[in-house]
Image 1: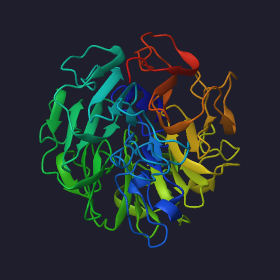
Image 2: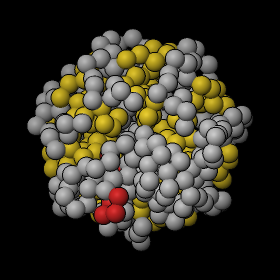
Image 3: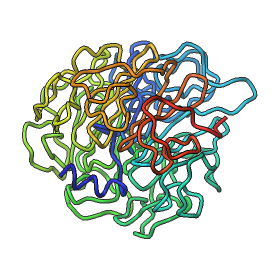
Length: 449
């Protein structure tokens, strides 16, 4: 199935090696939030700051939970979202300079990426075959281009062939591929420019195909062949529908993986949709059209879904993953699949996890460095070695990182100063450096403030 999805990836990229992107603030006891999944309150299980970025990131899921909405906030560990804020985990000083624009949120799709700037505008680059760059064309771009008719944006999200944005008024807009209703506008017509997601308001966190609402409920839409919408059916939904039986949600993750997961306010996790290789974590490989509890997992801060696996960041700043492990993407030192969570070997001080579509997983640590494991093709681990690693290894030439996101075979990092670096495959301009030259070490994205 992995190779089958590879043929479709250019249609819907992954939720991060293991999944959806959402940045997590693991210093939750102090700040109760951070983006991860909308910020979970460590003491009460409640959510205190859904708008602060931080958390687990996934390919396409890319959705930095909460995405960069906390403007001028004081302390938002983990997500780089505190525009002009005082202190953010993973890097000391707040992002950006006085009086200048800078990047505050990052969404990575299969072969494209989008960046949210501090002035509320969005720029995208890379593959554009379905209009996922939102510039009213299908022309691939190797440098970032502003998405027209968008303003007041507080978070961005990306999937395989579509992109979305959460507005400050609690609504959402999406653009790109819409063959299964992925844009949520009530149609199945591709859109090369942003359109409003229908019947959706009071959004607190946005992923590529799901939304967490301020009342702690969730709605999903789009492709549903594995039950990933969570409405108890396998019928595609072109408009948002409630996830059946799901409440008290603190964070949600979805993306190209056909799997969706949510962290509840009691710090447990429920997942639904595709259970390929056991990535629902319920001890089986049976697909589920409604949420099922992940076995043996508690004290969770954020979850991210991926093409073949799923990962969770715990409140103690360690991580666990489950599902497919053929390339070592679970990080437990083996290549054995696991239908229940296993610990990522030697990983501590974890702020965020992101999973790529090709068997690579990466973690952002609170020191602002990045470690990756799994398959090493075209340099997605950012290391000089030509082979992969079954346990986390440090990405060279990268420091001061606030947020990460993985695509199918490339990765990007948002730095503390509000710039972005990418590495890996660049055949479609997904590194944003003005070339189509693949790179094994991080390169600065051009034309971003």
